Amino acid sequence: MFIPRSRLWYTLLPATKAMPKEMLPILTKPLIQYGVEEAMEAGLDTMAIITGRGKRAIEDHFDISYELEEQIKGGTKERLLSEIRSIINHCTFSYTRQTVSCLIEVKLHL
Image (cartoon, rainbow, N blue to C red; front, side, top):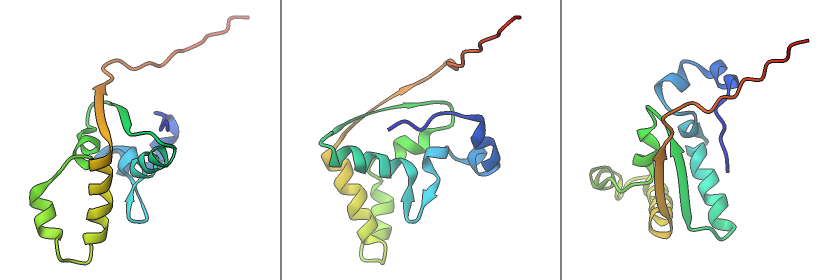
């Protein structure tokens, strides 16, 4: 799954300024989680995610947060906790940071 960087996302400012667009919630979970779940259904268990500046939330989402889990246990959101825990236990995540923008500009001279 690719979630491309695009000027289209400027229309979602200031939300995308405060959080990565991949982390925007769709119903009860972030967009990127749907992509990971779809990849798991296709039989993949290794996820390589390219991040950039200000996208630590993606790494944190697919990591264990013992403090948060303690607060959620026994509550109404425990089902959501078990969903993400299942993903974390099933998949191997690797992250690399894109340091340079890969925009290519083509100019036509007539």
